[in-house]
Length: 490
Image (tube, rainbow, N blue to C red):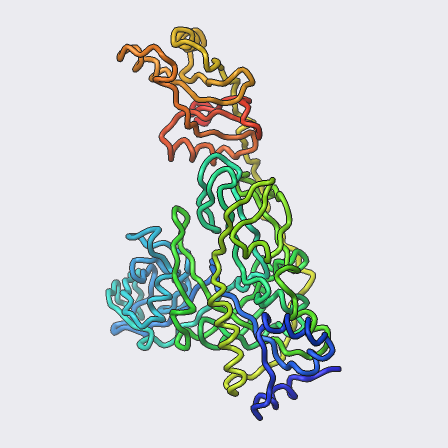
């Protein structure tokens, strides 16, 4: 049994099209079977609402009098990219404000623009004979500019990983704040509502496919960057008119100590042309898997403790190494459902028709990592032997070791070589000045550490952020394997 786009669009025109959301399709296939579902259902709608860090917008302001050819420009103190025609620009959602930094960025500018708020435009030029104006400082609203095109080179991620952190410090990442020692877990994506999970072979998704984008109508214009369908990491390149969109589905967001992004609402209608598509659009959260990835290991090929499905992810906790870990989503299921329902209503009301893709997307693309021509140094390349005292040591012994070895740091361990703390020459000096004699009076027990496979620049950043000059090197069992100091880094 097959249907065609024309047949489905004729049903939309006549008002007798049968549309359900991807969540509803699961129950229909379970209750009635694939064959009946394929016959009775015409369209399945999907939706997702989450951070899309590759989002941005092309804007055209029109010409000033006299004209200006921008060299540099800022929108609400967020620098935009000019290298286009005289008064065109591209603003990316992750660009930070020069003034508010992590609290405001390009994503917030796009949200404010769509919300109808005035945007301050500052710009300068090196001037030419035909563009003599050197500076401009003005403001505009969305209605007052010519074009405002949302252009997202990478959107609608087929899936995200679930991020955790095994290290001893809090990490600030694109998947949010990750607490140490597997203190929490973060993921994103809409699971069974995710557009690319419902048509993973791109039978109906391709160049020219009409979609829900940001509250308006948009289009797929190609595969997204880092498109990697062989690993279930497909992405889409999409565009739409900001003047049709709503701030409900375009939200600027700030991540603590990481940066800014833009939450984008996207939904794709999938025509049920055959039984195969009926089966694919009935995929459940229990059948959709991703990887738990340890962001505590700072390398490209991070450890993956286990695979996990979205049914477990959507619970309050996940299981990891025999431990219950609090789990949260960065995406909004409420908005994903609302997008799928809104798209369903548009189709039922005859406001949205389907169009076949002019060209389908590739299914065999393999994502390639960056080529690196210089060797990265790791902590293990520069670390030195640690001078150790046990936790029952007296201050005199520690002071003697500092003098005899001509060093500034003594690592304190127990008899099993497990890290207990660190003492510096300054700590000993301070103890003597204040008549302290007990090791517990001067030891630093909350120690910032590193590991053999941590890149040198990461270790350097730890020292700088914490205003310290050395890091004990430990293994996965918290055993001391060495020490790296600012001297080695210099």
